[in-house]
Each structure stands twice: as C-alpha cells, then as structure tokens.
Length: 205
Image (cartoon, rainbow, N blue to C red; front, side, top):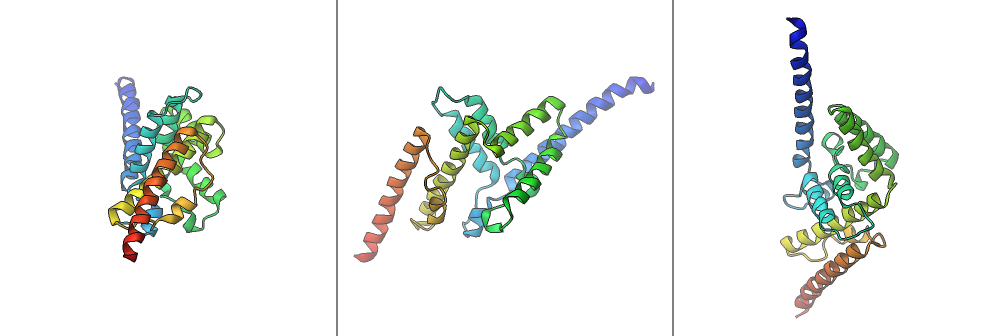
C-alpha cells in the first residue's frame, strides 16, 4: 500500500510547490514601486503593473534582430525577486553588490519551487538581464526605463503638475538607443514639454 501512495504524494508535492511559487509571485501585485512612494504619488503602481506594461511593450516591438519571445520573457522575470526582497531603489542607499546578492538569493529560493527545467530557465533569464549579456537584455533594460518615464508623465498628468517628476527623466538621460524607444521617448517628451509650457505660460498671465 505504501508504494501505491508514493507517486501521488510526489505529484501533490509538485503542485504544492507550484502553488507556493504562484502565491509568492502574486505578492508583486502588492509591492509598490518605491520611487513613486518616495515621491508621495497617490496610489503608486505595483511591481507587477510595471512588468506587465513592459511585457506588452516587448510584444509590440518590431525588430527582426531581436528575439521577441525572449524579450517578453525577460520583461516578465527581470523584477521577480522583488516579491521577496521588495523594490530596492537608489534612494535606499544599498550598494549594487548587496542588492544583487539579495535578489540572487531570492531567485534561488523562488525557482527551487519549480521543476528543474523551469528553474534553470527562469534563473538564467533573470541572470541574463542582470548581467546585460544579450541584445535582448539590453533592449529590455531600455524598455524598463522608458516605461518608468511614461509612468512618471502619467502621474504628472493625473496630479496636474507637469514637470514634478523631472528626476526620473534626468536619470534616463543618454540611456536610450533603440530606434523604437528613441521615437517613443521623443513623442513623450514633446507632449510633456507642451504641458509644462502651457502651465508656466498660464501662471504668468
């Protein structure tokens, strides 16, 4: 009788581990993006909000030199460790090496809950992004920063305070090189500059 129950027990352990993994990743819905919290943005987005739009941006990219599927996967995995360590921002003054160490430990802890092939795939995607070791990873890094300033612009519009989140724009200066992203950023900045000009013009009248 004992041997008959061994297989189901192993199978139920696997599904139990998958459930734990999904619950942990689900925490990303409740981890606010720290940069917005520090700027007192009302109802700041979560880490999963940010990663979702990044994944959509990767999905609608037209670039024959890039593996689109890999870009979407990188976008979905790149901040996954934050479900355990939280969103560590530059203002937290935690050294880059320490941030990387904490996130690496979290990724090992998370991926241990998955079958070996998936464990390897997710960890390697995360590491590829961290080390910026491929054209796809470098592109997704630009998506990460483009999505951030798009969100900053949206918060400025919601608050009706154009220009308030300028620090986020300054932090991305000179970081964009992919033609699609350069075009997006150019359009976004033109819209934003028009809003800033309209407000400053109105304040002088």
